[in-house]
Image 1 (cartoon, rainbow, N blue to C red):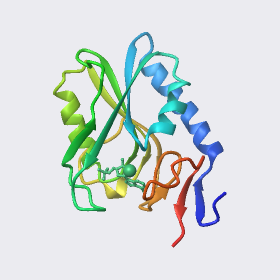
Image 2: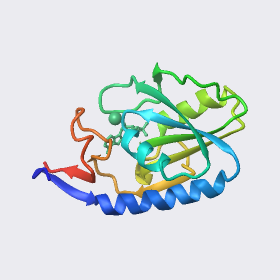
Image 3: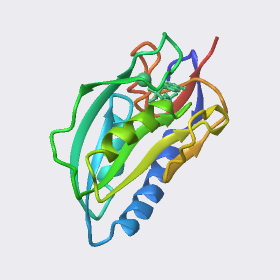
Image 4: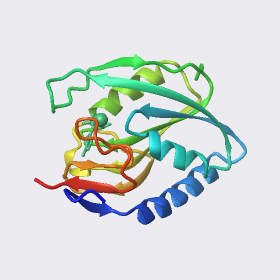
Length: 173
Ligand code: IMP
Ligand code: MG
């Protein structure tokens, strides 16, 4: 374990919660096929762990967006750096995100994907920071609600570091 990181949510807690989420999602999409959309890069570890525990039929696709507000603040203006390869029209689509902070990125992304006329569009996030929301969006499936603290690990980065930590931690100042 890195000594400058405080563990906030352990590997065991995350894995247990992901199993619960996968069960909930499997029940919701039972008998249907869903397209799981991984929002790169932050969701990548969560996405893999979640997908392998879902029992409904799954197709996977990947998208990378970057927000182009000033550094450290989210504007809701997004640029699609890598778009989906699958056609989502008339499909059941589940966006898989690492964290909802202000929610502005997600709100814009939802607008972009809804314009492609999916049969349904839901959002699953590993972490949610409800006290930071600026956009009125509520993810359909939430792993953990956390306080307003900058976290890393399990896909989340600080300056591209720490994504591979198997737990959620906070960088000590
Ligand atoms: P939003 O548009 O403000 O919701 O920004 C969401 C994006 O900001 C996430 O997908 C993350 O990439 C990043 N982000 C927000 N909070 C954190 C954090 O605590 N740690 C790491 N990345 C974060
Ligand atoms: Mg990020």
